Length: 206
Image (cartoon, rainbow, N blue to C red; front, side, top):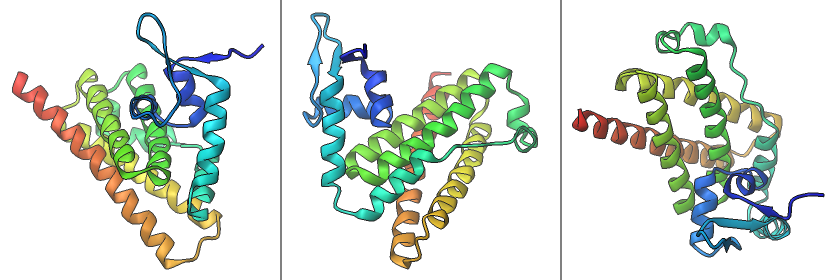
């Protein structure tokens, strides 16, 4: 039998967003949430599924739903040969390399959220991802230029994925392409700024 109650990560998996986004939605009262005696957030599976359906019906732009669907089917593939060309990547052990690959997929999923939610939620998710990139880089011994280069590598992959999605969806409207590029730049700029801010904190702490 399917578990009726979901924790934060399980709800995020169903919704296709980062756990920090689920936490924000719950705290804003947008997503039904329940608290355990210990204060932990719990979500009813049925409520989450119904909420997802209602959000999809209320999304005003048909193009956004199309892209959300396409992004959900996109796989963030990076060849080992391409990564091995990067000097920062050669410094990493296998565990760190796996973390960066997961970070690339999280950025794709975060952009999905950014495209179809309000600006505040999208920016909050972008900044959460920036902090995660900084944390991974710090744990892996990368300095700030190397951490930025790692982010730029995955941003390039993200741009390629978005272009492939738009081309595959046969979207020809210049307005739609312009809107996508503006949001893509806004999202990745927020990730990068948060990454640099976190590295500045590390530097000040010594």
